[in-house]
Length: 225
Length: 314
Image (cartoon, rainbow over all chains, first blue to last red; front, side):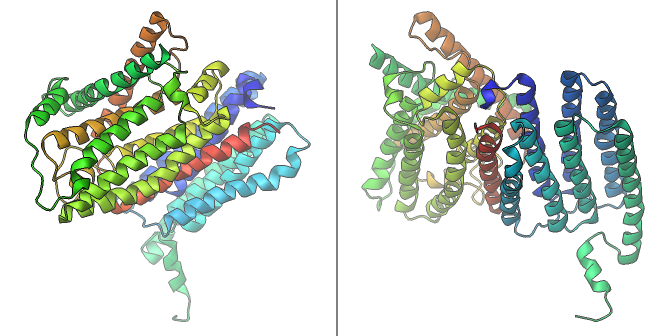
C-alpha cells in the first residue's frame, strides 16, 4: 500500500517515526553534552506528540496520561537534572572528540537497514504501518546502544540508555496502542529512579577517578599495561 | 509561444538573482544592527564592474579569460532547466536533475581551473578547498534529489513537481530528510556561513573568494552574477520541489503572475531564514566541513531509506 493511500494519521505517525529516528542520529554525532541533552529532550517531545496523536485518533484517553508523563519526565525533568549535573561538574565546555565520527554515522545507517532486514519476515504477515514503525523503533534502540559504545562520557551513556527506553516506548505506542496503565506507570517510575541513581553514581565516579570519562576506568586494574 | 515563455522565465531568473542577494544582505544587516545598503546595490555593483577595465595577469592563459563566460553561461543554462514560475515548459523537458548537477559541476570545474591557472598561492588553495567540499557535497545532493525522483518515478524536475502537486498534501518522512539534506548542501555549495563567508577576504578562511581573487572588471561581474544565480537556483529548487504550491500549471496570464508572486514570496521567506541562521551560527573550522557534509549525506541516505522502508508499496 502506498503512502498516499494511507489516512492522515498513518502518514503523521510515519513522519514522527522518521523524526524520532533523525533525533537518534543527531545524538549519535553530538560532541557537546548540553546539546546532546537538548536533542534528547527533543526526542522526548516527539514521543509526547506521537502519544497524544495516537490518543486522539485511536480515541483512548488513557494515552493522554502517558503523554503527560512523558512530557513531564522525559522532556522536562530528566533533561533538567542531567543539565544541572553537567553544569555542576563543569563539563559543559568540554567537547568530546569523537573518534571516527563518520564511521559511527555510517554504522548507524547500516544498523537502520539491519533492523529493517530483521523485521522483514514479520512484515509479510502484518499491517505495514505497525512494522515500519517497529523497524524505526528497533533502530532507535540499536542506535542508543551504539551511542553508549561510541561516547566516552558517562552522561552520554545515560542519555543513550534513556533513548533505548524511548525506542521501546515508541514501539509500544504505535504497535500495541499503548501498554496497560500499570506497566506504563511502572516503567515511568523505573526511569525516574534510574535517573536519580545515575546522578548519584556520577558523583561517585567523579570522586573516585576524578573524571566522568569511562575510558579511564581501564586504568583501575591491578596489572599495569 | 512556449519557447518564448521559457526564454522569458530564464531571463527573469537572471534578472532577479541580484535582487535576491540584495534582499538577503538587507535582512542580514538589519538583524545585525547595521545600516543596510539599498536593495538595488548588487545591480549597481555589477554595473560598476562592467564599466571598469579588467586587469589580467601577464601569465594568464585563455582559460582565465574565458572562464567567467563559461561559468556564467553554465549557470544560465542551469536556470533554464529549473521551473521558476511555471511547470511544463519545453526547456525544462529537455534536461533532468542529473544534467542540472552536471551544469553545476561544469561551472565549478572551470572556476577551479581559473583559480589554478594564474599560479598564485591563494587561487590554488581556494581551488583545492572548493573541490574538496564539492566532492563531498555532490553525492549528498544527488542522494536528496534521488529521493524526490524515486517518489515521482522520473528524473525530470518539472514532471516531478507536477507529481507532487497532483498528489496534494501527503506527509512524507523521506521529504523531510531530503529537504534538510538539500538545505545543508545548498549552504555549503553557495558558500554561505557555516562553511564559507561570502563577505570576507580574510586569507585563511576564504574558499570561493580565494579562487576569484585575481578577477576584476567585467570578468568579476560575470562571476559574481553567476554565484548570485547559483544561490537563487538552490533557493528555487528547495522552494519548488518541497513546497510547489502556487506554481503555474497553465500558461494563462493570471496563473503566471500568481506563480511569479508566490515564488518571490517563498524566496523572500527562505532568504529571511538564511539570514537568521547566518546571524546565529558561527563559521566552522575548515576541517569540520567534512563532518557537516557527511551529515548532509547521511540525511540524504536516511531520506532514501525511509522512502524505501516507510513509503514504498509492497
